[in-house]
Image 1 (cartoon, rainbow, N blue to C red):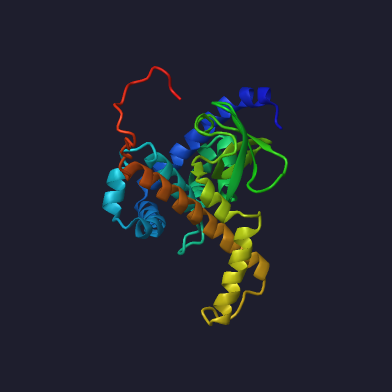
Image 2: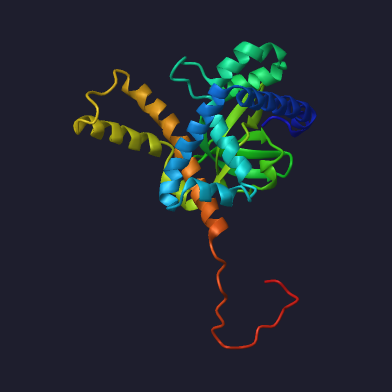
Length: 274
């Protein structure tokens, strides 16, 4: 573990620099129509996988979720996925383009953070300990590996021990941070995704082999293992996003259960909560 005292001393300034870099990146997107339109397409693409399962349209979905605390998470998560996806025209990511033009104006930690996001992947983590507004201890979900202490102010106030989360982990000079959007995954979905650490990878291999056998693709890539890893890195963010959004949207739109008075006795308000 990084010592808690060290985290407390370094983290506030680091967090300010990181948040400023993210604001600068958002301003850059809003100021450039090409990148703004590209983000809208990415947002629509990620939502399309969810809307079909929900049986609703995007306008209804947005109207519901914009009135909840989850809208910021949806925006943050989709924006991160967009920021690291290479452009089909130039091959550069949003972060590459921004740092090439304005990187000299960023703090050192801000530049390091943006580079680290570009090289990060969404992974499933198990929470082993929490100190609200200070840190979260995590390890890869479904393993007994050593825990990692993540300096985290916001998410640590809403997480509990043994939660499963999907998040990007950033290492800045041995201080670990979440990239921003942290998705708590329902336990039943977490177990389905990660019955063991290689669950997703094994299923991706089977899917690619089946696609080749059925003629969907002409042949397997020369570097099959690397191609599988790249595909997994593409699929996991969508899997996590879909599971979390379905859970949160259904919770927001579900009608409250009506209590059933099975014995017919009169309800009385109690002073003791059970």
